[in-house]
Image (spheres, helix red, strand yellow):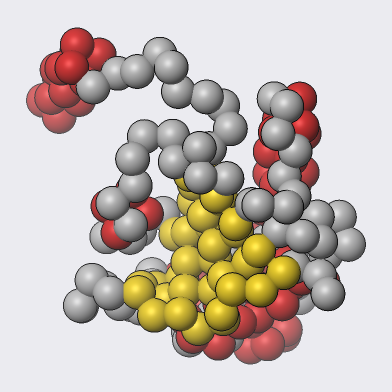
Length: 178
């Protein structure tokens, strides 16, 4: 209960000193980052993002899942309604990291992980769950293969090292299609 009090106190300070009613629903840098829920891997901190610069989608492992495609479709609609449809000039960053806890599910609850990833349990090995360098390549390829995403969005695959604090480009920036 004490930490909840701390959070509400921090919010009061934020509302007084850091809040901006001028932020737009569309990220100012036209960037979406897909990353992991691991608290060591917060894109706001890693990239020193300012408020409103990027839309951050976080899930277990920062993986491309069936639910992620649904989220992206909804965000695409929100952007279109907001007057700035996702397309040319937008960036999509896939951010995986070392020492990811998702590997624990691979070894202790593969049935749960398979359902989450939308594959049969026997196909988990094809997703490189325990190798962030390969998994980021696999997820970028899945995004590129999705016919519902805009062709002219730029996509990049990065891996964050939790022991050094540095990101490495694994999949250089390129268009989703073409």
